[in-house]
Amino acid sequence: MDCARGQLLVAGPALLDPNFWRTVVLIVEHNEDGALGLVLNRPSETSVGEAVPQLSALLDPEEQLFIGGPVQPSAVIVLAEFEDPSDAALLAFEDVGVLGTGPSEEDLAVNIRAGRAFLGHAGWGPSQLDGELERGDWILEPAKLEDAFSGEARGLWSEVLTRKGGSYALVARMPADPSMN
Image 1 (tube, rainbow, N blue to C red):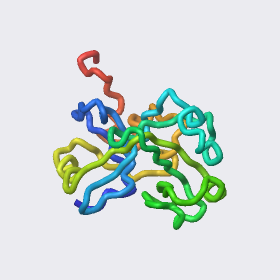
Image 2: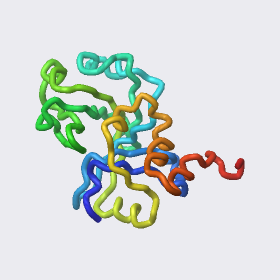
Image 3: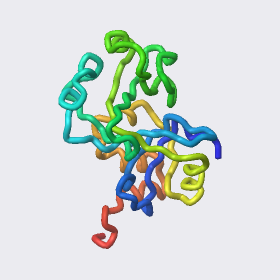
């Protein structure tokens, strides 16, 4: 499989794992060692200021913290749009990537245009994501800046499938429980 970095993984309708049901995952890194992604459409009930006050200099403390995935659920990852893409620890696409843990918040605050904090991430071992893609668990779509920082994150799954068009647009309108159709 080619590198999926910078792609959105849109959960297919048959993917029923509760960690990933109707999720949209941005792939931040994908290589022979595996893949790392962030679930973009699972805002939590907690604000950044409540959970990680030290990030308040960097991110709006009122912004919701997002659930990035089931791996390392107590670790915080900041996804950001960088003024200088070389400031990213990992670059997902264009100038969007994740912050490293090195510089102080004051240094980082001047270098990003937008940011969002995630608890945990999604992870795949070597060839695991390739297998899931071959099985059809995920639908691939190139990521866009507005996906990463969507103001309507809960609606992102339907929005991305609708944008993809064709039969995917029909899937986007499927009820959560098809027996209720």
